[in-house]
Length: 257
Image: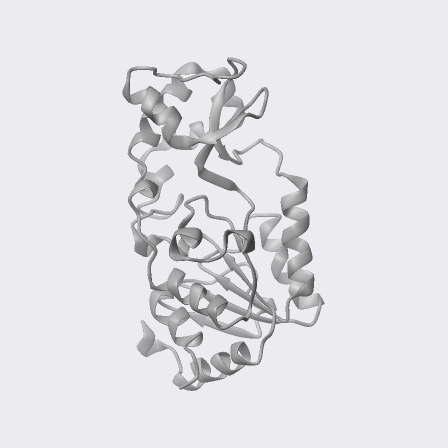
């Protein structure tokens, strides 16, 4: 795919990033597909192949239908997130931090691969939560996901909260569930503060995370969009690069030689 990208365009974007002091990277599912984590609605997406999984992502179904929760726990046992390794796109964002240019990462992903790649967890804003922890719907007790999975493997088909007996779910934001205001506020704040917004692997159609792009644009930041296809925010892009994320992102953040 790199052949389709103008080399001069890559060079221009590389210069923009080298001149930047506060880069905010916004990432979506597309950055993790090279790590073996499918997106949700694509041809090989999780919900495309398994419509029942989409039902489990709706908080109303999850809370009110025990069979939905039981199926969700079985699916969690085998999610590719447990064994996935960061790819070249993730590594490039670590390089951006190593260069001292990374202000924050706003990610729509729940896989934890930015932290696994080596980015400072304090810089990662997970707007949709994380699959690596559970949270009780009633008392909000939060624990490592592996504790609950061990109970499922031992035969507990719908493990309850060990503190209050309430319903457990992954510490992610389901459809119908409110986002955490403090997290979204922080995502918007860093978008206002950045001098470059680098959006990678997102269709930029899911809100409020997608609002980071126009917020950055309104603040005078350069907006760089890297994705395999068109996005809903292409009109805001100062630089638009369509193609392989695993090729493009390392090329534009390459250190000066």
